[in-house]
Length: 70
Image (cartoon, rainbow, N blue to C red; front, top):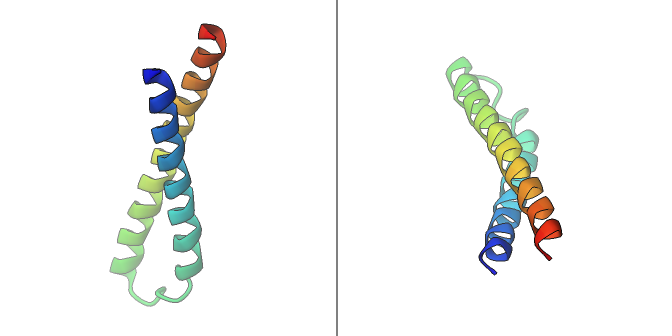
């Protein structure tokens, strides 16, 4: 039961992070004038990418765990 709840929460967070990445890529061309903004934008994109990888791994582990538990 707890593992199922964790998987649902991780899946929802994964969807949100992926959608934030999609929105960020569309706006990158509109604000490309300032180098300082570009660096902060780049760090945000890097953070979102790392969060996507971490959440994807956690989702995979919980999926495999639920497969063997049930």
